Image (tube, rainbow, N blue to C red; front, side, top):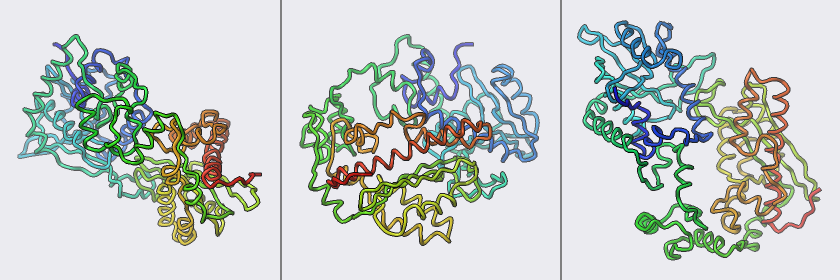
Length: 501
């Protein structure tokens, strides 16, 4: 038997022919990002819950490919197909392709035993690539002789609220895709044939970088492919916002990579500012405009930042899938005399931190004075969600939103340093304005993603007390730097010479 391509390889081909070639011939060049790894972990968690939901009496069978091996997995699948119990990770193969189904459910049809296939996804809606997945899966299973009567895709219902006590009924919402999947047989045949032709080549396919490098998923070979491309002195991807259609056509038709070669007439005002700063090496700072934007907001003032966690499968009663739950805040208060006080909150008990967070936040922010944040939509949305969950705190929480002042628009409109490389994230702006405040100097936690990972570790029952204390210290240091950074940005933008004590 010649080479057999797995469903994952066929989906890799659908994303990019070069990707599937590399998957087969040079898998060692693949480097999955932390985001990709988190997606895999979320998928595993949803798969665990799906087995509970589709087999509540626990009479089904899970085929463990890692323990059993391919041949045993396929043989056991065939044996189990004669039963009338759910099968999980059932394996099917033809001479050219193989696949493992998340869920197989027995269905009696016209007195005969048939099967319904359910593919379980951790996303909240059915996407085009899910339909490709189901079409490939159905084709392989039917070609292997399975009496398949139906195919569904089960996604996360993001509107569902966890009632607690491990009751996850309602977490998944099914969409029947039988008709679409069965109708694409010829299409799937062509994908399999084309993918085999690609991987049979000794030479790596030549495919330019493009949207496919991150759509529908970030490709693990992107860094490798990027390394094959000459490095631009000032790459076009520094340009912020959406590029105009004319510029996109120019880039696609000419392979334009250098910012200096982009005609000014194809850029908006902000993009022109970025191009000018990049080519000249000079900082743009409209001091008067920045100061005017902030002049109405007097001291005392508060500087606020949140850290949040989200679970694809909720662990706390009253929360939803993918809901961003705030577990930490940092608030700095700057008085009229320049006295700076810090009010932090962090809960690593493992219990839902939401109510304690909301109560402490109201207390930390006082009754009056502007509350400066960076990207107000994030904090405002979290506060509104807390207000909905805790009616007794609703008025106090919503009053905080009325006081919020966003420093991000001030930065975008009035400041740009070449080292920002097209970004106005606080991590990009801060080093230019305050080089003495460096997130890289922090121990353990240096960005929001690392904060979520650290928090997840801290609340894990297996984490030792000493490690939990270390994580708490790291999280406090990180979040405190976020709000201290806001104080420094405010001082620069407002033109305040106030000496902070």
